[in-house]
Image 1 (cartoon, chains in turn red, brown):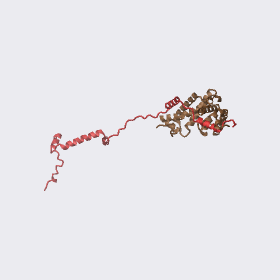
Image 2 (cartoon, chains in turn purple, red):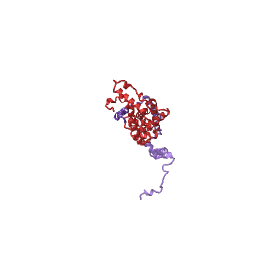
Image 3 (cartoon, rainbow over the protein chains, first blue to last red):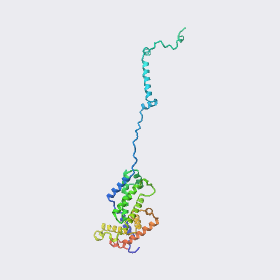
Image 4 (cartoon, rainbow over the protein chains, first blue to last red):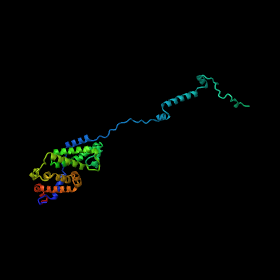
Length: 117
Length: 200
């Protein structure tokens, strides 16, 4: 280095001062850069709303286990008919069915089982 | 989540967030990287502010476009951006067919014309003289000196930016500093260095 050159320390200090005073971007430049950024930014995938899964209730699950609506309808009919049979007197049943009260004798020869002597 | 220049989130992580659609990451990267690229481009283009802004915007635009393919760990965002800015500046210098030759004498004389206003004015005069001297350096020396001493890059980073070897970086930096010292030597007294007790 020639004697007339700057000292290294002086130059280093000058460079450090310059490093601490960089050109500042204008607001307009920052706006343009940010606008580019947002325009170029990949968009996150849009989540499509699928059909809402409805959790079946307890009764629905029981009905499904038994076989569904038609089976339940049959069961209901049978239950109602069973109740009717239980409440109606045998005479009414005979009336309904057109049968006589003593028409049904399944074991006509079984009297000896209850006859003494 | 908001990011700012002081946030610990790395630039590289912000790139990934940006590519995933995070708008705050876009803002944070803009705030962090744009000023540095602009300052660098302004010095490479010898203070041509309008061209430096164009280079900064173009560099950032390329950064946004490369984001979806960005792979963390391969390179730093600033290294990538400075490399792009370097090439853009070289292209512009070639396109205009000349390099702006700022004579050292073109530096503002305000600091020397106002001997009573020392301090801030003298500092401004020194910086202007430095910028003018930088503008007179050969392009590669100027790039190396600016990256090393003004942008604080390491020699391996500068080597990656300039796409040369580390030894070449060291040589360019050393020659650039010597040239700067020689260019500023004739202005020592005017710049007030004798007052600092370092007159040589």
